[in-house]
Image 1: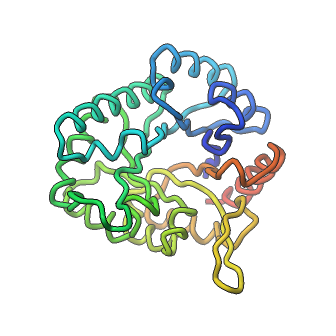
Image 2: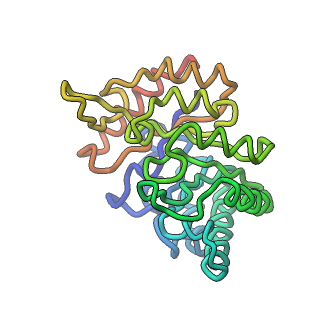
Length: 270
């Protein structure tokens, strides 16, 4: 399995345009680009970023915008909110196309502890059809990521949404840290939507004797990566795996490099 790193792992330790030159010496060749804000969707900036990526010998698989800046409004019932959000969505997709990305990672809308309104599947499923159609215009595949604070926080949501859409255009991202933060077993997401997964975010975790969760760098916790990877492959998974950790989980790039090397070895036979 091809292992890479998401630039989100270096969030605010460096600007995104400087990250490619940091990753290349580690032996990283495949990346996910996390775009932090609206100015980073502008074509002039994205073309600069693409030059930096090319100079570093890297390939972009997926683009991941800062979702809480506009993705909730994609599902708004207010026409102006939705129209503006769709415009930003197109900007992000265009950025992905310039970068050579083939996949867009989406969080979607927060569920706000179940208090968010107007997120019934029968209402938002047609919105996903619109979003899928627009992504196709940019030759990009839309992928919904499981996120503890968003509507896809339980495996059943993904399975029900997929059934309601009635096709396999929508793909999914398994995020390990978000699964355990949701109180879910990552294997349950594989079982629910594994045949339509197109991306995998690697992070590790541990539970102490009192059941308290802590996040760990990949390879330093309790996640059974080989078993999880085999479960995904058994469902037909052929995509990459990206280390996507919070930047305050490590102190220097040597720790990130070590985790990358560990994951390459761990997943090399899949």
